Length: 393
Image 1 (tube, one colour):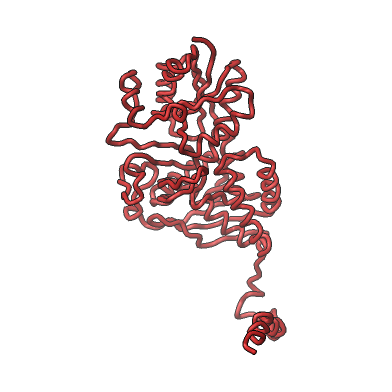
Image 2: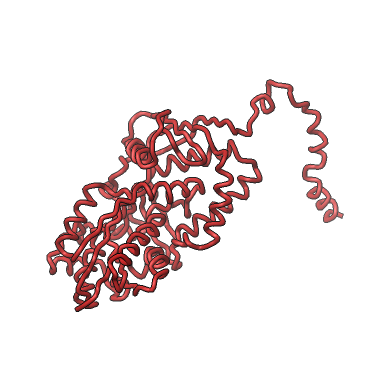
């Protein structure tokens, strides 16, 4: 046994069993784990560290919360990032985690990089899009050994590896500051109604309290304040997750099209993401022109698709961000939302760059001579009428 391998480590079942597998099946003498903190609960990071110390040769824990929010989440908000209704929580975090793992591998002089992703999901692609930018060998034990979750649970038991997953509750959880995903077990059946026990961030919407109105301030397209109080991104998102969760905001149960073409049933919790994306889209409708909104919707869709695939280093992704950033230069203002029993509804908005004139649009004002619109009305739909005359001959 010789050599070093650096493993992207979460403390979960898949990555935990990877450690002895990399020693027993791949003959590595040193397995180095890297825990990247992108906003998962403090206790989860601590537990992962404690577990890593028991079964690996060396562990790094990297606090990347601020970088995650500023360099990944903020651009996502500007792009209204959503893939088929999924707010891209896990997807947008993977490239950053992979980047940090690669940095450690280079510093350690490792021979290989490893992850605990299966061959059926998206994460293998997101990690490897970054890993394969190096000359290091890339290992994926789950995929290469065709492992099942039941086999992993038994393997962990035999090797004395403590894991919270059981055959009765085989939920696979991925959590960061932007979202919490839950999958596995009976959740893989689209006809199965998810039990309340899988949710941690949000209460059941019907159990939510009375309505609450909150106000979010934006500058250059990103949130900068809550209820008029300036806040950094990490603090603001954390607080919105708390407030939104109390009202049951931000649950998604969807059939998702994975990159490989497989359809999967996914469950997510994302209170802050729901609130911020709802507010940001509404502010854009107040500030951007109709032409900008129309074109940006196509850009946003492509941005979201590329982020979902983990293709953040593609030149086109940078090009899309350049356009998006240009539209956000005047995206300043505030949005008020009402949170109530699972819903986040915009009830008011304002901006110094609003393309809105109450005087011009009001039915009670005469700033516009309505008779001027008659000429437009005469030609509106002209070709359609001409077409009808031709075919009716």
